[in-house]
Length: 113
Length: 109
Image (tube, rainbow over all chains, first blue to last red; front, side, top):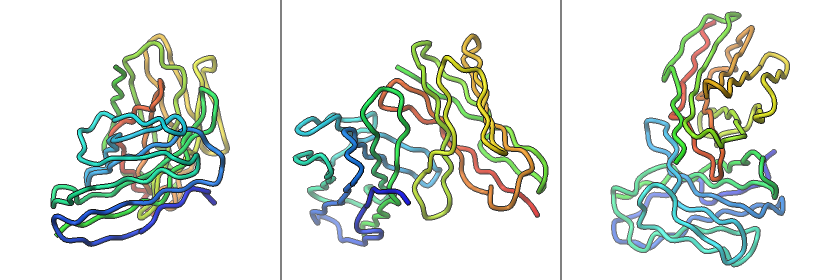
């Protein structure tokens, strides 16, 4: 069983609302990532963190922001949701060291109406 | 930066047959190549990985091969079963991992 948790699993929200997607891991992993997965399956990196107080933007331009105040917690915030934000959001983490695989959460499916 | 190409995008096989998914990468500095399986409603799960100092790795019905000279690596699933039906992703380092676009595998009973 993966020790990385995402909440909520499903969310339907109106345009203009502010939302925070939660991601927590209990494995002590220093690296954490957020991916957006489109209906065509492709995974797009939107944010990542290599440790507390360290965050970077990924390849996909995103209007979201992240924070990393605690090692185990990596929330993603959308200040003003739009229908174009409708997607599956996946959080992942990886252990210290160079060659380590990712552990993914089960994802949050977001629908903005 | 790194670019990972994955083929085919969809693959249908009869139960018991073998399935092969191929990926190519562009950055010769990449040294870690994991494969993930994503079932419906779940996040991707690591199923096997290979490092650049190894040419082949096997775990029961799953094997991965790596050709560093040609910059390609492949996933082989033998004796496929219906529960192998899923989306499979390849990926390559450097960090953060760069993923292929995925292969939807259907195993027909």
